[in-house]
Length: 400
Image (tube, rainbow, N blue to C red):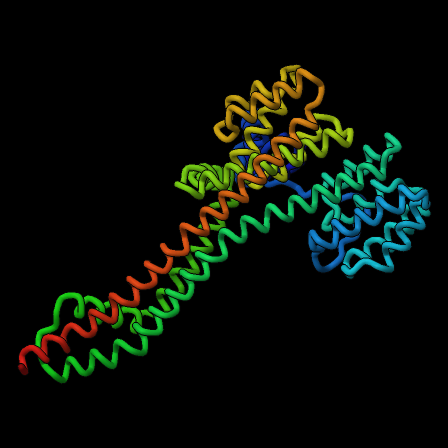
């Protein structure tokens, strides 16, 4: 259960406080049931008592190496404190070295490893700490650390594939926008002055391009301000429950990209849940962590609904079948995994399959976008050039 802070009004006047609920919507419904009209409801970020935060972030690569080395030393029989001492000296990440030094002192002071790690939530998330807690309890800490390192590496690879799909079109569109803006601000005015001195009637395409150039040069600051306001409003809207749900739902329906997002969501869900279940984390806690790391509100809501159904004694596959994200094959394989008692292995197989699907989809998308972006760039720049030369061609014809 997450903790939410709220402000609002009731019959008694202004009220404020905290309450526990599974989602922000559930918290608002709970307040409504108490007769409170909420004006602000936001999740209170979990922070362990005495938690210490360090500046800077830790790259997935460094964290994967860290957990793999930790696993190797634990498997070799070294004491946990000694392992931490070695890791605090040789890690390439400064925030990780600093945090590990503090964790070493906490462990030597009598805390469990999971408790010590929870004091550094910016580096070690819920998934990491819950898996280590399960590993400590079951006496299989080296196995859990090995699973964690594999999970981090595969998650990083999945992120890299998605970034690869986005970098090329964003780069081409940015270059096209810069070229067009440069032409509109510096090149077109020169042609416009020349055409004005000629005093001839301009072709419609030329007149349109010159009008756009005049507008951009005259209201450049307004265009920049409008773009900034648009981005800010979009980000604010996405932070709301309604906005994030609407945008994520729309993203899943976008041609080509929607299918890629769906495959990424399924791969992330199955990899995360499979890793947690295999490490001995309780299914309800595993579903809560998986939902919070889903990266898509539609998936998060579907997983939380599944968690509520599982808490009532139902199978996991039943509520997931009603979700708009998970294909029939995934549901069937999860159902078989539950029936045979091999849910973690089945989830791992699904994750492997969909990660390969993402790889293939990214390759196909990149191949499709390359010629498309070149055509778009050519049409934009070429159209402007042709529009500027049309009066010259007309003049040459009249001279002849």
